[in-house]
Length: 528
Image (tube, rainbow, N blue to C red; front, side, top):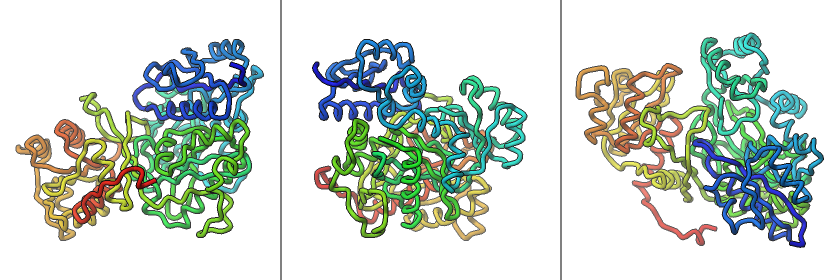
């Protein structure tokens, strides 16, 4: 072909807990390059992807995403540059080594990528910009890790640099657990230093996907996680737009996203994760690449972010690509970012493989475990959440018995949920601790036996189809055996269950909206 060549590095082999969202971004990158008149050369080694279909790219190399193989292909094809930002963490690791070999990296520079990925350099950047991060420290030895964790105060979130899917990321509650973690993590982290963060309890977590051309920044969407901070972003249900935060907080998040994009000189896609606690915004991390939320955001807002980012990477400006979005905002006329102003709710819900792993505890944490996702769209938040649940095969009940058993720290927050469930016509089952607490608050519930007590116990009732919905939050690091068997019984008998208070709130809202309004079917063409 008599065209300029561009090589796109794919995501490589997939494992459970990664998903194929990066493949979506790679394929859209190929489409955009073809539209702009380039020869698109795909390098990937996963036969189960669209990027490795014979008719997707102009040329496909089915090779490992490792330096030696990639250099061989580059030497043979002599492209104008290589794209590393659409395949996730695997190709991103090659940015600096490729540049050291004299290869042109298209888009965000390897230097900027390294600042965002190196936890110590990134912390320095945050301080320089005057933004906030959870209190943290960098540890390069066991002794240093213990000192930092003790100073910050448990629980802490521990993670190495350059991880995908939250691998080797863990919430630890004491020194013995931290030491156990370090013994395991050294193998996974390849001797990279460990970052130890203060864990922000009861915080709201946010994800932002944005595209920058070096001058202008397009904020694709701000996503509010329905689960609390500490649960991996890939495992949390999310809402576009945010449903519980005030407009001023959301605006500040968008402004901070722009500041970060400009400071890192991002060209292409960028993902930022935030936590909001007591009105304060904390930056958790920045990924100067496509994130796994790009397909969801693109489908929610009607703009293909990966295609837009690709055109930016090869030299086009946002004002050329999407001139209709470049307009002054009515709410914030002085805003210096672009926004897509979504008026409807899009809810992403995740799909888990629990039924394939009968011994695994079906509970969420910092390490990603989901294998897919669905979305529900509606002008009503509750109905959008109901549709998303239905998409996963979990239909929320309209009546029946709801089993509630929550950790002591969650008991005050469960009162309003229980009251709403009673108002919706449900009967509440509860084990002794939760039952007594609800009774003190004037809420009627039926006492049911724990697994360790006489039969019939709660697991028997689940097996006998006497329970329509389960709300069961874990009580700290040492999960009770009862809770494990309850969650396993819920999976086996396909009973909807929620292990976070925020998830339970969303479910109650969904049931309420569904009972009051019902579902109205619309074609996608009517929405976009």
